[in-house]
Length: 297
Image (cartoon, rainbow, N blue to C red; front, side, top):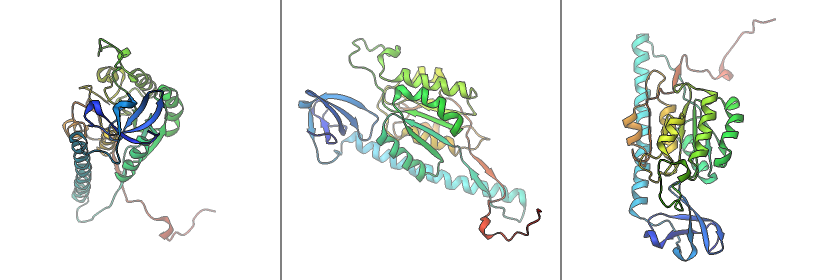
């Protein structure tokens, strides 16, 4: 067994694929390839595989991921059509063109590979985003520095979390039962000190099995995980994309955004929140093509 090997766990029926992140004596630290799951496992429980197994859970996640992407792209097309029809109605026979100002995302992730996947998807969805790889324990301090510089409309605070298996009673009300929920809460507090208004800064926080209720109480607009389930690595991106391209005149369609995340309503929940998307007139010119007569001395 080597670092970076693709493995599955015998004891779980090989339902989730992992990469080996670290090896400590007879145990390995493993990270999910599709789900935001960080775990340790006895070396004897791991089976090296040449590719991610086509388990039911993985296949369902892949299908839902493709469906979510298709839905977002279709919604964009419909939004463009509505914008143009509204402007045409206001301007009569003229057909003014407009430019878009979607909400800007600051994405803090405790996992470098998931961050890379997230930034690729933001680019694909035309969402302006800046990403930072930061350990969960360092996210609060990082936000102190980053928020005034980036001035985002949407903050994503995610990484790895989970209910600690060594806690025998598994008291789900206690933050001590979770790996990183307290760190996420500390970061949310910093975000709300920077901007307390829920519609001026949308905060999306949490990872697998996070303390959903505590994250919302701390000031998150959307959080995981109501059902304490594993969430897909890209679920926070889909929520952020929906917030980025929902008009400032409207609230984010809760049923739409939560139903079409990959993990579903047991994986992500939230509260009513206005969008961050604006349009402007007229369409921005290509200044290299303008013929201008200088008028200043």
